[in-house]
Amino acid sequence: MPIDILMPALSPTMEKGTLAKWLKKEGDAIKSGDVLAEIETDKATMEVEAVDEGVLARIVVPEGSADVPVNQVIGLIAEEGEDLSAAASAAAAPDASAPASPGVVKPDDQVLQYERPGATAGAPLTTGTAEAFRGGKPLAVSAAGVSADGSGRVFASPLARRLASQAGLDLGAITGTGPGGRIVERDVRAAEKAPKVASAAPIAAASQPAAAPQLAASGKVPDVRNAAAPTAPDSVIKTMFEAGSYEEVPHDNMRKTIARRLTEAKGTIPHFYLSLDCELDALLALREQINASAGQSREGKPLFKMSVNDFVIKAMALALQRVPDANATWTERAMLKHRHSDVGVAVSIPGGLITPVIRRAESKTLSAISNEMKDMAARAKARKLKPEEYTGGTTAVSNLGMFGIRNFSAVINPPHATILAVGVGEKRVVVKGGAPSVATVMSVTLSTDHRAVDGALGAELLGAFKRLIENPMGMLV
Image (cartoon, rainbow, N blue to C red):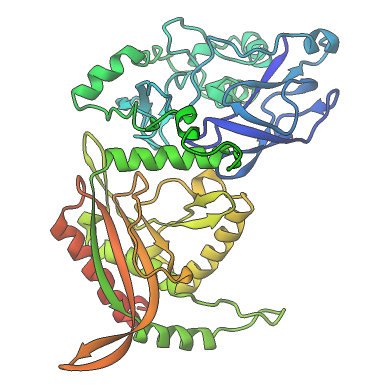
């Protein structure tokens, strides 16, 4: 039997991908770990590695194909000694009983059971949608590779089945690490070396789609099945414009994901907004002094060059440490209070935007934040960020000051409870000591999830941010 190569889910929000390029051709020998193809997701370009050995018998989905669903068969690998012509003629249609693609919110928003990130073995499962628990492990296929449809079917590659049979191992007790939880060769090899333990019972089946409305009504999970529904069908909208007066540009995966997530965010998160002005003169003077003292590389370039946004990121991170109750994420069962300030920063890229995350920004120097941000922004524009570099985070910063925008309100990006919108620094007349004077002023607006952060708490957080921006020396100690 040929081994299926599946379109992988490379991020929690990925539903479809573009098969950009095949790096192997039919007839090439394949080893475990070989890079087979490049996949373009809604956020980045990633490499797909082989998890089995053999020969690439057939390319099912040609390179350049767009909107390839997660878990669809894109190619076939024949095992050693297998008839390549027979393998190449094998049916390429995806298995209807294959596990649901992980991390995807279906239009009817099926409710699944999840294992929380970092949960210990045997920890209670969490019921909810993929978007509600980003980074969680979906149990449409259990950790032991057993299907959750009640059939008891074990998903494993033919090579893994043969090796397990030769070693006398029970496939149902082996954890699968291949696409969709499939058991592959490395899993069997690891099980051979592992100490023998009693096999656990298969994990309970995921909730059926029909249970979703009842669960949502009970308050256990959010019901966002219709959150992304358009206000009018495309055919109706088109009648509002003269034929030939517009050009239709199909949505790519990034634009579809942005539209869906922002619609869900505005429809399910109760936003409120707080604004204030920060004086920047002290910060600008300190920034100029720091940049002037930067050493040079062998190429004669400065080792770092601070931007105002670097100070904003650091100030937001420290403000969350000083107001820890605002460093939180709302879930239906509990409030998650975060120990570190992981600050996402909105970066504009062709066709949309992405939010790389500066982890533990409160403990990093301004120069480290500056260099890390430049590196991630460059890789974001090239779509080379890894999923773990743009998922998660505890807050975010969106800065449109470089475009001359004075004031705006940003949409919260789940699982964050806050996002800071930053405007341009400009000369304004202010009153000091009862007399008018001129200062460089920047307006900022904090968008807040009212479920997690109340008005007074949000005001306290924004006040802490303002004090840090106006007294920037405090960020250096």
